[in-house]
Each structure stands twice: as structure tokens, then as C-alpha cells.
Amino acid sequence: MDREAKNKILIFGGTGYLGTYMVKASIKLGHPTFVFARPITPQSTLNKINLHEEFESVGVTIIQGELKEHEKIVAILRQVDIVISLLPFPQVPDQIHIIEAIKVAGNIKRFLPSEFGVEEDRLSFLPPFEACLDEKRKVRRAVEASGIPYTYVSANCFGAYFLNYLLRPHEQQEDVIIYGSGEAKAPFTYEEDIANYTIRVANDPRTCNKIVIYKMQKNILSQIELISLWEKKTGKYFKKVHVPEEELVKLTETLPFPDNVRASVLHGLFVKGDLANYELGENDLEASSLYPDSKYTTIDQLLDVFLVDPPKPALATF
Image (cartoon, rainbow, N blue to C red; front, side, top):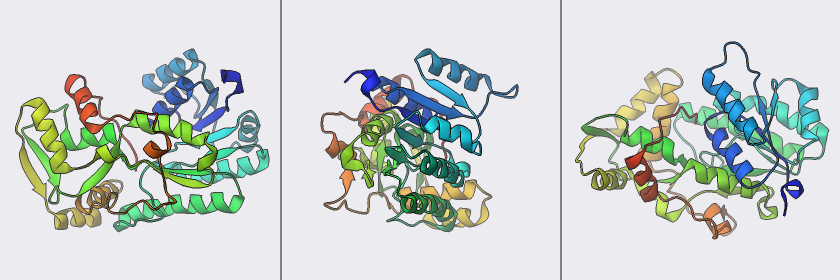
């Protein structure tokens, strides 16, 4: 199938943390790719300007605008087939503007709202994170009520982000923080794999109006297992500093936003092990099972990358 015959993909939030991976994956897989981004202004960072130039150099069409520009978004939607939203949390409720525009355009084959984290319809967390997930649930219900063909993606823990957060490879530290006992397991997925799988998922008839979960068996590890792997690769021994569950719960109650949300995420993921505690049913779709021909990056392999040239820490929103 040549590039012109492939579905045209429009990405909202394409200049953000996960969005950058997604745009590159879309281009790599041969899709005409469009990015809707906030306008470049005199206050824009050099990184943002350079990213726009990099995208345009590989054939990405960038449309600058705001989410409230309804007519502009409708006009763009009529030029594409698939819409992927990667808007960060503060903008999650604003996806209603995208939904309304898709309803008017009437031609979109698939919409993937800004999910990519936990599977919020089957899990619950402490109040700060739960409030964030409630906003995502509202978007899901609005999509379903609209009749728009959709796919929800639950990618669980972003691999590079959480390895940076948990192991701090850029720091010359002698200790490592462990939340709770460190024995609860969590599923990790490298961001590059999240993007590559998602582009395939967005084009797959089997995933229409379904939830796809990224839960690769080799990448379900506890903090203790992760630290042990890192110690073997670095030849170092790290002092383990445990943060008790009750202390983490207290932080969710006393820290300001968004730090209270982060503490709530750490509690659910690494103390309770909520992401690994539910089994996939016979009707659940799991990415690596859907695409056995795609070899994903194991955490062991990703740690080798960190050993040589660790990806720099980035701000990701939950």
C-alpha cells in the first residue's frame, strides 16, 4: 500500500511528550500526518520552534490554532481519516471541542481520545488521581453518546518516563526511593512502542469501539526487580529508602496540585499494584497479542539504552 492510499492522521498535542513519539511513528509507518498545535508566538521556546521545523522537514503538515476555532478544526477534519488526541491533562475536558467538530465533519473513521495511561473504567485510585480520571471518563461517555467510531488505549506506565523517575540515572545518587514494600508489580511500555502500536491500532478494524491494553508480559516488574536489574547493569549497589504507604497517602491529602496527583499515582501503581492486579478477559484486546509480528522493547533492553545514553527526563502528565 503506497503512502497516498493510507489513512491520513490528524494528531492533537503532537508537540507534547508522547505526541512527539506519535508523530514520528505515524510518518515512519507511511501515513500522511497532520498536527494541530498552538500558534508559534514570540514567547514560544526554541525547542518548540525547532520541533515544528523538524516535523515539517519530514513532511508533517502543521496547522496552528486553538481548540475553540470550531470552523477551522472542522475544515481540517474533512481532509483526514483518523484523529488521535494527546492533549495533556489540563486540556482533557477541552476535547469536547474536538468531539463536536468530528460530529459536524461526519467523515472520521476513528477517534482516539487522550487516554494512554490507566484503564479508568475498571480501576479506582485515591481522590486526587481519581478526580483526574473522572474527567477522562466524561470524555469517554461523550464519545460513546456521539456515535463516533473510537478506540481507547490503556498503555499503562510510560517506560522511559518512569525509569527516569524511579532510577534517576542522570543523578549521581547512592540511594533509590522505594514506594511501599517495592514488591507490587506494574506494566511498563516504552513510549516508542506505545506510539508504534497506537498507529496500528488506530487503523485496525478489530479495535473499533474497543479498549486496547498494552500489557506485555516481559515488562511487568516490581520496583525491587527493576532496581536489581539496574544494579546488575551498572555494577553499583543502591541504598533502598522506603516511603511507607501511610506517608504516601498523607502526601495525597496535604500536597498542592499537581503534586498530590503524582503521590496518588505512585500509591496506586507502585504500592497497591493496581495496574497488574486485574486479569485480561477473553474479550480484552492486548497490543502485543494483536500484533505478534511487532517486537516490543523489553525493560531489560531499555535499561541498556539508559546505561549508554539515558533519555533525558521529561515532564509527562498523568
